Amino acid sequence: MAQATAPASAPTQSVTVPYVRAPVDKSYRKMLAGVARFERDHAFAPAASLRFRLLPRLPATTMEGVALRIAGERISVPLALDADHSFALPHNAEAEREDAAVLANRRADSLTWRAAIHSPGVA
Image (tube, rainbow, N blue to C red; front, top):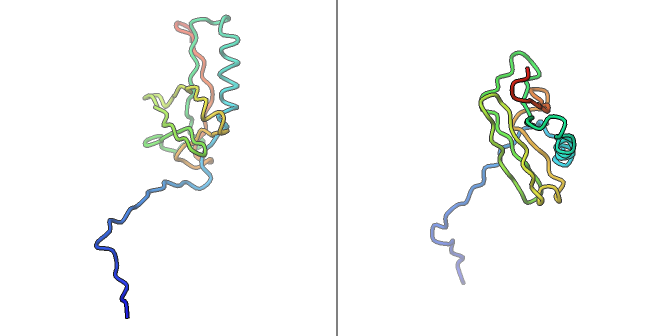
């Protein structure tokens, strides 16, 4: 009678999946449409810059440790946050094809973001 033998100490693989129930998310394509609109009208304020700024929804919301990424079926692109909790949205053709979303590691009821257009020397 043959005995089944276990493989000799095969390494165990693990995968960490950070999960937030009901995360803050926005359509990447819709955000790109906003970027395209800014670029189309950029001649009205040629020195202006477009960034997106994270905003807390509640006074008790802490902004420390927030992480953003563009996520699709096969793509995940981290987004860098500045000290003022703002970020620039890069164009990524693969993310656009995949109908990706911009995701935060926070719940939707904790924060949101808005476009921030600023011209140097203008309040």
